[in-house]
Length: 313
Image (cartoon, rainbow, N blue to C red):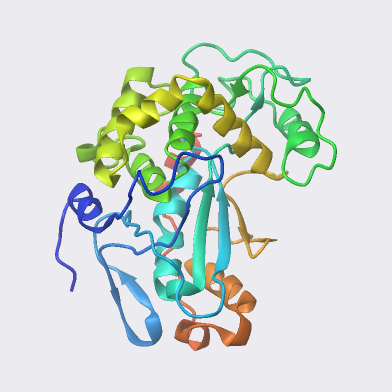
C-alpha cells in the first residue's frame, strides 16, 4: 500500500519541472500524469487509496507509437474542472501509462468584454448569476474567434477577458497561462481551490488578488517554476499574449471541462473508464494491457457533493 503523505510533500517528491529547459511560449506544456496515493493492480488497473490525487510527472513517450492526446479545456475556479483534473483523469492516465498525453488549456467559458452581448461584471462577484455571465455571448465569441474559426475578426481579443466566475478567475487563469499552462502547476492550483489542501494556501471565486497570487507563488515553488519569471509575465504584455493564445486554442463548447481525446469529444467526464476506452480506441494496435481489462469506474458523487458543486458555480 502507498504510504500516507501530505499533497505538498508528494508533489515535491514527484514533480519534475525545469523552468529553464523551455522558454515561456504560448504553446501549453504537454504532460503525462503519474498519480500519487495510487497502487497498480492486475492488468494495470488502479485503486485510489487516500489523499487527493494531484501528482504529475513530466515524461517523454516511450516506444514508436505516438501517445494519444487528451486535451482538457477548463477554467481555474470551476469545481467540475477541478474534480475531473484531480479525479478520473489522473487515475485513467496512470492505467494507460505512456499511451496518453495530457494538455491543459485554461481559458474555459470566458470571452472578451468588448464582444457583443458582454456586460460589466460586478466587483467581487463569484458565480454565473452574480457576474451577469452570458452563455450566448460565449458561444458567439468562440464560433468567431476560437479554435477552428477560419477568419477570426480583428476585434476578437480587444479589451479584457470576461470570466464566468468573475475577475478572480480571470487572474487565476492568467497566472496559469504565465506558468506555461503547466499541468503540475494547474493541479496545484486546483488542489488549493476552496481550501481543499491547506498546505498550498486557499483561494476561491471572489477572492482578492493577493490570495490568488499567494497560491500561485506557493505552487510555483512546489513544482519548481521561478515565481519572478511567472510574476513578470502576469504583470506584463506577455500575460496578455498567453491568455489570448489560450482563447484562440479553445473550441466552441457547451461547458467545462471540455475534453477531446484524439480530437473527439469525451462525453463522460466523471468516469475514468470512459477516458481509458476513448484512448484505447485511438491507440494503433490495441494499446496497453488495460485496454483488454475489465473497465473500472470511480464511485459516483454523493448527493451532498453534487449540491455543493452546484452552489460553488
